[in-house]
Image (tube, rainbow, N blue to C red; front, side, top):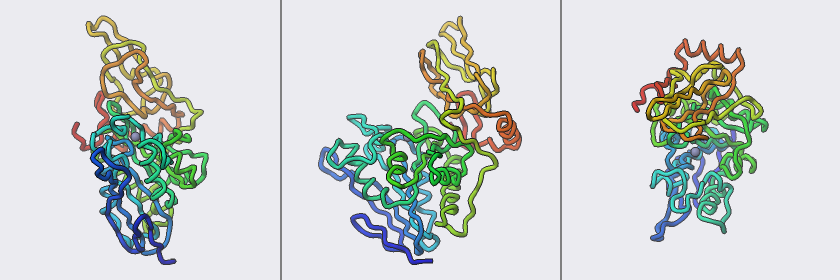
Length: 354
Ligand SMILES: [Zn+2]
């Protein structure tokens, strides 16, 4: 196997070296640097470069923990290639524990690949994209649901692109939502620039959810195995998976009335056609609206804040064919879904205490 290459930014990490450093992407009002924490683990041997990014939305923390663990876990002597870890991409949002870049509420995940002469978000995006992302061969961008909601552990990927599809499958999640991604998202911009990238959606904002974090670490290892970065590791194919196509039947079920939401589904995210997902009652408990599943499916996302307005999204349901539903039913009986156990509105990840 060929010897590795140096990874260059404004410095250089030679092959066989791991380096933790901060990289300036902007300035504060006081003129102090805004710096992203970066770890480069440059393998002794040459091979693909894989980036992992977290907190592009500043309050989405599960991925931050994944990055911390990844940066500690691997040694350059093991790697045939390079792991590029950007622990926190949206540093101002992270400081404020907000999704967007504060003050002007710019969404960093609609600002890629960015532009050196544009607004704050685009400049930051541009620095990160030009310096780190473009040199990579594959990318994994970690997200969670928006606050007050939670999401099942899944991958979002443009599976029409064969290399993206290979990456998405190698990550080994059970559910892949297929689609190109929003314009300006890191995933879409990196993929368009020839760096196949997927988004991993896991759980909720403002939390560390250990079961999901463990799964994601296994997923990264599986990707590194698939692309030869860890030649001795094995790819972890899941027992079943469901690729949800944009043309598939899926729905955000929305409230038609204002009121108090009582989630009735669970403890597992498989619901049968006609099953009650939740009820909405008025404050005097005179009226109750039942929200039932319009088809058999998997609850991919659910509301956690128990108040609803007309038009408010309650849950995201994707349809399952009978064979997959049966398979999931068996997995549930075998305890495979215990990591997603839910109790009313709480989608519990194993040992997580809410
Ligand atoms: Zn996000």
